[in-house]
Amino acid sequence: MTVMQAGWDAIIYGMSSDDMAGWLPAIVPVNSRRGEKDMIQDLNITRKEIDAVDQQIVELIEKRMDLAMEVAKYKSSTGKPIYDRERELQKLERLGSLASNEFNAKGIQELFLQIMSVSRRYQYSLIGDQDGVIDTMFSQIERLAISESTKVVYAGVPGAFAEAAMIAYFGEDVQSDYVKQFHEVAKLVADGTSDYGVLPIENSSAGFVNGIYDLLDRYRLSIVGEQMVRVNQCLLGIPGTDLSKVTTVFSHPQGLMQAKEYLEDRDWKQVSMANTALSAKKVHDDGDVTQVAIASERAAKLYGLSVLNPQLNVSDNNTTRFVIVSNKREYERRANRVSISFSLPHTCGTLYNILAHFIFNNVNMTSIESIPLSGKQWEYCFFVEFEGNLSSCEVKNALKGIMAETEDFRILGCFVSQ
Image 1 (cartoon, rainbow, N blue to C red):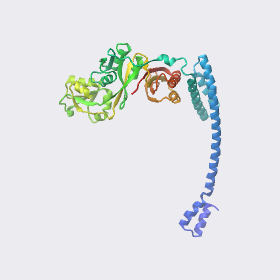
Image 2: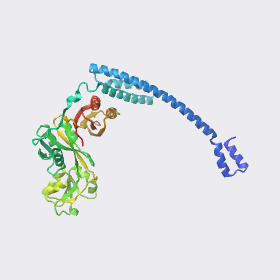
Image 3: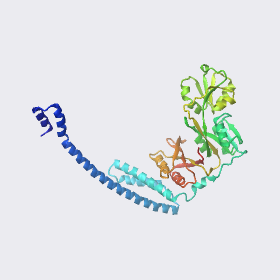
Image 4: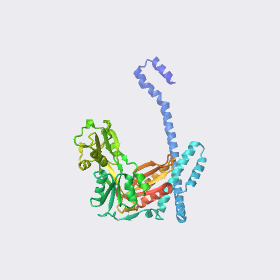
């Protein structure tokens, strides 16, 4: 009897709508429930087959890793590099050609790309830094050489946050000097005029400071220390300044960015300066009540300015991270942070494969930044920081793999992070 016939019989024999509501579902789903049960059984059979195939794959991958170990031994004894890009590309092409269709070809190539990448990481872990390449790049010391004769330079003028960072890290007994621009700091440290430089590299509200990583690379400087400075941006002006008459505000681009919400409601001309303290000095020197500066409260005291607004920060926890730079390639024994840079071709999966070296060596990456490579369209230089010490086997294994598979690789420093 069909469902339609059952429905007509129900009407003919005078069944109520409530009776039909309870009766029809009992008739309709019988075959569908039986069909669903059969489908579940079929699915379970298929899943068991997949599990069996997966088990075979695992066994074959483990066998392949054993073979990779033999290759690592051979390459270690002959001095041949682990990474052979040309051979891997040829192998991927051949493996893709074995597939029955284009979709499977791409899937197989992606799978084997990862399998070969994992094999390389295993080989790096087996060989380690046998040739001592990482150890030759930097020297380990107990403590940085800091005394009353130590020369330290920062960008800005007294009252700048960079000065606060310098005092917090070195104390007030060193020989300090200041210049206008960041690149001047880098140049003085690079040529040995100053022993150390203090440069802002990152703000918790506004992000990375433009151009600092580029300076480290250009002048071949090393990061040997770090200092966090709590930043409270104030609005400063000549005593008696009327905010309704203000037309111009001066500050460093980071200062303007950190006070973005406050400035959005004001039709003031925003003028960038080399640093916040210099903007306070300019307002003082000009003596113009239509001008204001965004800088620290200390800058207000130094230059005789009034604090018109004590806090312009978007965030209550506004912090700037400064790095201590040197022209020496050394690091303290207690260092717990490493900074590196490298470039990659603009191809699918390259960055992922590099970052996987951290995963397989249980190294925790803390930040990554990129800048376009000069003269190379759509190619970038990456700056990565991670937890660890250059003397650690895990860090050495990760760096050996990254160094072999990237271009322009450089260790920027190893330092104590706060």
